[in-house]
Image: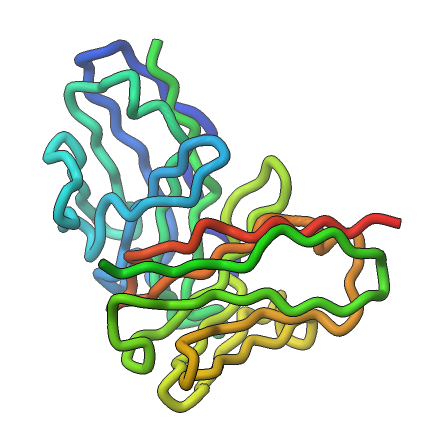
Length: 111
Length: 117
């Protein structure tokens, strides 16, 4: 089971919107709604930002939103802020023996 | 408040054994899966395996099957990750996290394992 494919980096200016893609297959992203997104600041543990494709945990800003189309999930950050600069990982349940798989990770830079 | 507290950083030599821990509190430890995640230096996240402390049902990612052992002691709400013979390539940060319906909703602070001769 290969990792889900994400762009290595995405950048934007404060106030702009950016979108990070997460491409898998019909055995993972396309086949299940167990897609989640995690934010990781340097030296810190990851933090859940989106679950079940588009749901936000309590306390997560509504500037973060998720969606899915076919085998590709997306995370959109609107009104980009300096504190959004971090690495972002998607994850999905998979029918393969690995059970779950992470994306390759995307570094978000706020210009 | 859900909390997962991991054991401290370890420095080991190749060939040595190691067991790191992850203690849960603030929720029913036996009714949620615990996942272990590896992050090698400067690299991404990797699923290692999961355990259900209620009955110790354990599933491993194929890449880690036979390389590590995941266990749990429900009497003390603690999950474990262990190696019988460490390699330099095991140097990484290891995270435990609570798995709730497909998402890792609470994470430990991480345990840094350094293996060097």
